[in-house]
Length: 344
Image 1 (cartoon, rainbow, N blue to C red):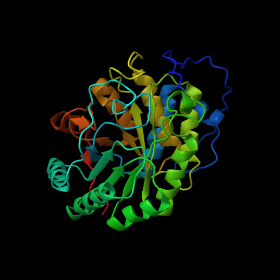
Image 2 (image 1 turned 45 degrees about the horizontal axis):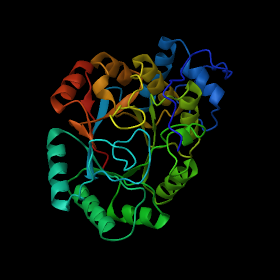
Image 3 (image 1 turned 120 degrees about the vertical axis):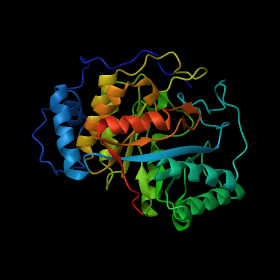
Image 4 (image 1 turned 180 degrees about the vertical axis):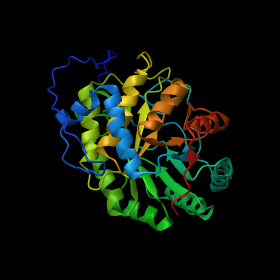
C-alpha cells in the first residue's frame, strides 16, 4: 500500500465546480444529491449554512435533546486491516497490543456503569476484519442479549457481515450496526487497501436487509479534499433510507500510524461538516464522535447547534481518549440540553 499523502487537501480554490444551493424547505428529504450541490452547501457563508442546518434540525428532532452513547472495545488490537488511521491495525507499530476478547460478564458490568452514568445506547466494537461464525460470534450475540436486558439500545461494530450473520444479530436484539465509509470512494484506496469501498456498502445492505438500523459516517482530517468529504456525504445520502445514524469523526492522530503527522482538523471545517450532514440527512442522528478531546467546548456547542444530537459518553473510545462524563455533563448544562430517552 502506498502511504497516504500527509498534505491536507482542503483549499477553497479547488477545481470542482459548485452548484448554487436553492432554498430548502424545512422538511425536505432528498436522495439525489450531487457532489457539486453538497459542496455548494459546504461552502455557503458559515452563518447561512448553520441557519439552514439548525432549521432542519429543529424540524426533525428535539432541539435540545442529545443522545448519550458509550462505546466499549470488546476485542482490542491485532486487526489484519491496514486502515491508516487505526492504532489497532497489525500493520502499524503503536502502543495498542492485541488483547483477548472480553467475557460477557465484564461487558455487562461496563454496560451497567454506562447506564448508571446516563447512556442510553451501548456499542460494542471488535477489531476484526469480518465476523466469523464460531465461539467469538456466539459470545457477541450473548453480549447483545445481555445489553438489551438492561434496557439499553445495543449497537455493534465488528467489521464485515454476511446477510446471515446480520440476521442472527437482529434475532439477538441488536438495534444498530456501525460500519463507517470513512472517506470518499476516490480517496478510499489511499487510506485502506485490505478491503474495498464496495465491500463496505455490501455490509450496509446486509444490515439494512436484516432490519437493523444503519450507523455509518466517516473521518475528516486524513488529508482528504473538500470534494472527498462531500462525496462521502453524497454516498450516505443516496442510501434509501438514509442511515439512522451518521457519526462524524475528527482524525485522532496516533503515534505509529501513517497519519500521525497530519495537522489537527480546523474547527470551522468540522462545524461545516456537521452542518452539511444535517442539511443532507435531516432525519438522521448526526453523531459528534471521535476527536472531541481536541475540540474546544465552544466548537462542540456550535456543532450541537448546527445539528449534532449525539455524543459518545465516557472517557474512552475503543483505544483513544474522550472527554470525561463530568466534562460532558457540564457541556450539556451549558447548552441547555438534556439526554435523549432510549427509543425502546
